[in-house]
Amino acid sequence: MTVAGSLRERTAPARPEGSGDSAPAAMMALAGRVPWCWPALLTLALGFYQVGRPELWRDELASWSFGTRPLSSLIATARHSGGTQLAYYLLLHVWIMAFGDSVDAMRALSVLAMAAAAACVTVLGRRLAGARAGLFSGLVFALVPSVSRFAQEVRFYSLEVLVATVATLLLVRALDRPSAPRWLAYAVCLTLLGYVDLVALSVVAGHAAGVALRWRRDRDNGQLWFAAAAAVALVACLPLAALGSAQAANQVKWIPKPGLDLAVFSFFGRNLFYSTSVAAALIILAIVAWAVAGREAAFMTAIAVVPVAAVWLASQGAYSYFFPRYLLLTVAAWAILAGIALSRLDLKIAVAGLAVIAILGAGDQQVIRSPGAHSWPTYPVGAGGSYLGYAQAAQVVADRARAGDGIVYQSQEDQDRWLMIGYGLQYYLAQDRRPGTPAPRQLFIAETGVRADRLYPVPCQQPAACLGTESRIWIVGSGYDRSPYSAVTPAQAALLRPYYRVREVRHVPSLTVFLLVRT
Image (tube, rainbow, N blue to C red; front, side):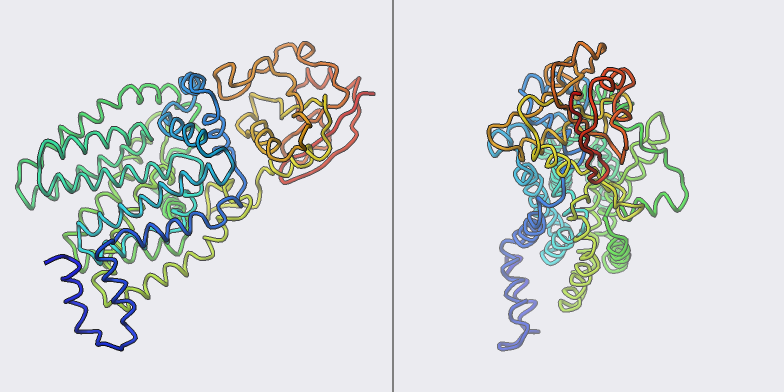
């Protein structure tokens, strides 16, 4: 008998013909045949809802810079910066060639990857605890605010969640029926995960704990081939690990080393789900899952908790990697724990539980779609009202730009290049400037980042040699500066001050745009 048929037999007696429960019963029957479609569609709907409203933020602009470079420059640049995300940048490069670099188009790649992850969560939950558990797992996953948030991010996080979930699914298949092809498929998927994001390989620690639990129960020595498969994948990722270690100082030095105090894990939980109330609800449901289905819950608890512990431990070394979005893959495990709990409840109560999760996350769902939401990486902790208004600053320049203008983007590169002011203005100027009006020429750079195979432009050591005869110069600086000369180096200020005067000053969110004209 099929799972769908079993489900219909189990539910039919409780729902006589003509009752008001016929629609949920029909939905469950359809879900038995294609259980992954509803969570995938819900994730797509939430992912594409206002997908273009939040402005691109600095991390997304870095992705855009990589993705729009010629392939040779992209690979060469990855040797110096962002090498551990090379697989995503290559995929984004192909995607942009096919669909363009609009905000909607670039984020669509992440939306589709997260929808596929929701489908995989459903299949995995179904395989572990039955059809109803699979459906509820996928729906809970789709409703978590952080899932929608990173489905709308031009970064690798959605792809990481997808590949990690597929790897866990392949692991479960191999544990159920160990065979060389199944272990090989798992090893290949795990290797791919490492090339998407090295930190995501922390899932191996969770897998190891889960395998130990299964072997203790089954005593199937074929399951011990996990060690060989995982070792092959980890060895295959060693070249990337060496590259990532060399670049770590520039990539993760801003992450503080975590302690064992309650504040650290409180922040981690809230930021992992992008909602304090949803985090609390999922933890409660995980406890319920242990109470009603401890054996099924144990495996997913290992996937949810052990990778976090592994990254916490690794972060006690030279560099810290303990930041929630790097462990977004564990949200899938928490969703399956919640799905197991809901599946053991009466259908009406379970549906009400889903509705409660949706209501608890509704406010967060709206906040993460505000214009500056992507510049609030610690949401819902801290202040998030401040963001760099690249689009607004670009609009100011685009409305008044003339042929022959020059522009300086926060030229104090050593201190402020991470703000991505140059890339932010360049991106939105390309969208906003009037037809026939060329983009202002960037001043005080010896070489563009693309030509130098670096993420950032190479600054000019002799400013006078990099200044032409521009009669008008735009200067865009961070904050609310009163003087354009605080946004450039002292040498550049000394060169500009005698020959230019300030014609216009415009403030936009966290940026100031100055127009200088030659006296």
